Length: 169
Image (tube, rainbow, N blue to C red; front, side):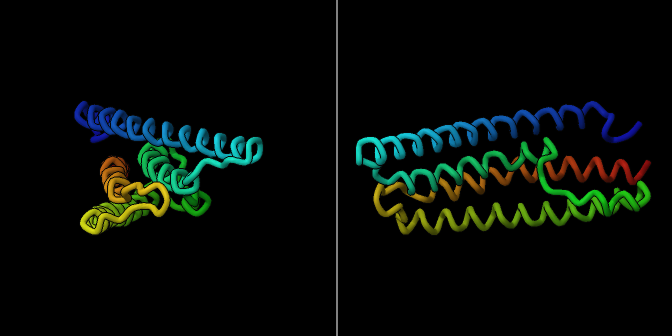
């Protein structure tokens, strides 16, 4: 019996997929709000000479929510960049070993990124940093990025376990 065919791994995979899906939905809602903001701004400025005040700021913070929210699910869905033509020349174990290495590297990156954005969020929270025009506090968006690194790390751990399982077979 392999690791990836066990019931605990299947439950782990399904729970990570559900969690990542929730984060993606939040990102999609932010993307919709971004489109609506842009639409209102364009119609207001071109049709009525009254642009939406702070639309650039609002679009910027919504981009943070949208991009960070979609990280983990895009990894699950296979939408991240991967250079497969080099892996085609490797035997199955070599490909698994390279996947293990890249998973460990990716996990380290997202652990550090999550921790550093959390520290940055604490820093800008204590300084009450906000946008210039709309006075939107920026710390929740740094905390959001940090929070979105958690499901990404779990997805990478899941990939790491799958690669180890392929290596052992």
